[in-house]
Length: 124
Image (tube, rainbow, N blue to C red; front, side, top):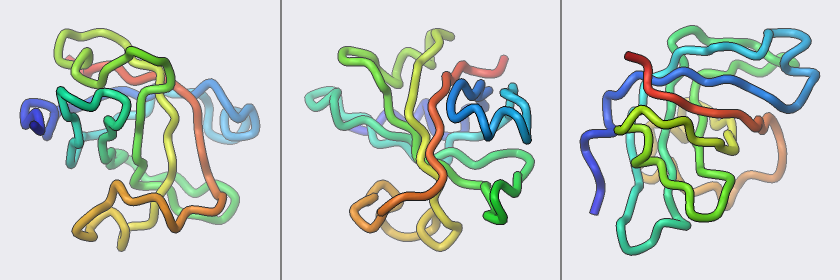
């Protein structure tokens, strides 16, 4: 069951890795909005959200506007954002055409590119 309460939520991203990203853009906080959510109560290991940065960044010549974020730690849930908790995530940059596709969460095409490690927290 998708939790619509995540959709539209504003979050802040703090990036911890790779250091090259932080050297160029800083570690954040970067403001983003949750555009879509795949959060299934019976399948917590398969959670993901589609994030859109409020301000696009260009890193290594690539525009970064959309990311798919998934929890990094076993047992962590994106639903914790609702309670104001911090969630550590892996973030995979996806192009705009993938973000607006019928299934932006399908990363089977991804063979490398901009991937980040960081944390998310609800922006109050």
